[in-house]
Structures are given as C-alpha cells and as structure tokens.
Length: 287
Image (tube, rainbow, N blue to C red):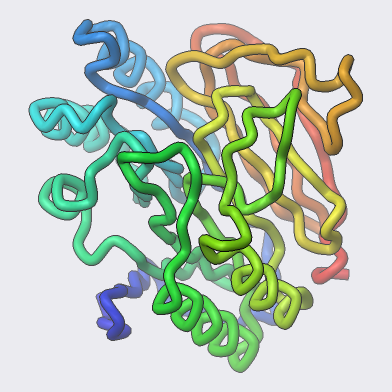
C-alpha cells in the first residue's frame, strides 16, 4: 500500500510485470447491494448468494460500484464485510449515495479515492456521490488527482479504468436523469478524459438499477452503468430509442468483464439463473 497524497491511496496487489504484455484480464463487477433495504433481511441474503457465485466465477478481482448498504444503515456494514470475506478475491468498493463517507471510511476503506493496479491496468476508484442527492459531484481536488493518475499511467504504459457511482454522461428522459452536471465538475472531468483518451478505456458506474446500460458516443472511451445485485427495472430504453444501449436482462446479478485482444466483453450473470445477455466492444486504445 503506497500513499499518493491528496487523500488517496494506491494498492499494488502484484508487481507490474510490463504493460507491453497486455495479457488477457478478467474481473467481476457488482453494484448496489443495498444491505438493509426496507429494513428487511432480503438484501443480506441476496448478497450472500451473490458473493458465493462471485467466489466461484472467473476473475482476478472484484469491483463494487457503490450503495454497499441502504440509507446509511451502519449496522449493515459489518454484515456486508462478513459476507465479502467469503469471496476470497480482492474486492475494491466505492461509496454510493446511500453510503455516508464517514461510515465508508470506518468500515470499508480510508481514504476513499484510490488507485489499484492489476498488471497493465490501473483502476481509479472515485467517490462522486453524496447522500443528499442522486446527482454526482467531482471536486477540483479530485480532478487534479485524476489528471495526475492518468499522466502517471501514460508514463509507464498503463491503461486506465475509472469507477464512479454516478455516471458523468448526460442522460434525460426516458433515462433517470442522474449524472454529474456541468456545474458540478462534468466539464472539467471530460477535459481530463479527452486529454487522456488514448489511455482511458472506460468509465464504470452503478446507481441506475437498469441492468447493463451504456453509451459509446464519446469513443474511444466507453461509459457503462452496471446492474444491481438486488433489483433492476426495465425502463424500455431500447424501445424508446434512448441513446446508447441497454442489454435485455434485468434480473439481479453481476457482470463478468474480460479484456482480451483489443476488445472488452461484458457477460451478465444472473444470480441463481442463466443469462444470454452479453456485449463486446472494441477498445481502440489497445489496437
């Protein structure tokens, strides 16, 4: 564990063996577990089932994209952590708008913003959520930190994946409309992304509970909101010609991500059931 300053951490689970290898990389994305939802035990039982399947799934590490518990219910964090330990893979979380930062720091990780290296990929974990809003917020300090991390990744030949609970991508009806507004850091954030578009592969988010929801209009960078492990809703986005894509699967689940041969494949994994939903996107930065 190496301190980076500016309230951030870097985790080095393995030595960087040379980014030029660009070996096949598989990992798992889960989000919005919401333990304590409606003051019932269903979310805890669902997380237990999900964790068991994640533990058996192919993937070197796990990304949890926020809303660990529901409504900041402090007693739920130890329950989440106890189940998390059964996965026996590295798990890296970010807070969601249901996770008060002081509680996240107490029970999950402090500082919250962090960089994680796995071979040639650097994953940047950023808290852009607040408990009093569904929108996202990126501070000037976070913008400077992202800029520096992207610069460092370029220097050593790494590629970057950025994880934030709330999407930066503008989305309007029939979407939920929750995103990082221009006055809350969206412009500055995309300026960083544009300057490092040859290194940033994708932006990963939770928050939407709409299954796999993505946008590819800012190519070569892909923007994706991932399904909730607890519940998802079909907002009929494809039928309403909403920009981007929404895979036709809305049961609770997680996602297997594989990056190989210049492409990223997402495979929807329904908890306790099979699913055919998948999407493969070209990563032009890796060509």
